[in-house]
Amino acid sequence: MDKSYKIAIIGGTGKVGRYLASRALENGYQVRMLVRNPAKLSFRDERIEIVEGNVQNLEDIQKLLIDCQVVINSFGQPIREKPIYSN
Ligand SMILES: NC(=O)c1ccc[n+]([C@@H]2O[C@H](COP(=O)([O-])OP(=O)(O)OC[C@H]3O[C@@H](n4cnc5c(N)ncnc54)[C@H](OP(=O)(O)O)[C@@H]3O)[C@@H](O)[C@H]2O)c1
Image (cartoon, rainbow, N blue to C red; front, side, top):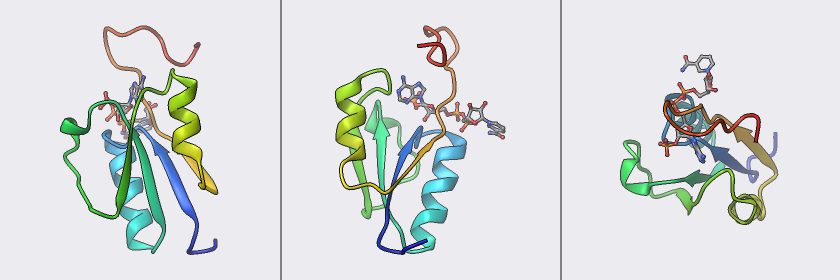
């Protein structure tokens, strides 16, 4: 894959998303993550662009995907929240 690619990651504060973001950076890719609450980010790197938003909001998704060639979705259903998969 072209190393100039920018990878959009949904669920970057989660276990899978965090791992994917760190591996993408290690391999020289650019990373942009959709994050509901940036204060929750336990993994920080100045090379990661953050888009604050919710996967259920189309405008947030559109903002996330600008200039990205790849998108990886790693969101998980939070307990006690409305189902996101069916939506
Ligand atoms: N971990 C594993 O070993 C494993 C194995 C097999 C499959 N999976 C699957 O992989 C997925 C991710 O797993 P995980 O362990 O990384 O889960 P996780 O640690 O619970 O992370 C879930 C991520 O989804 C995000 N998210 C939830 N609702 C969102 C919304 N409305 N908008 C934007 N982001 C939202 C969470 O953001 P917030 O921080 O804002 O809540 C968090 O970043 C799940 O579907 C899981 O079933 C995981």
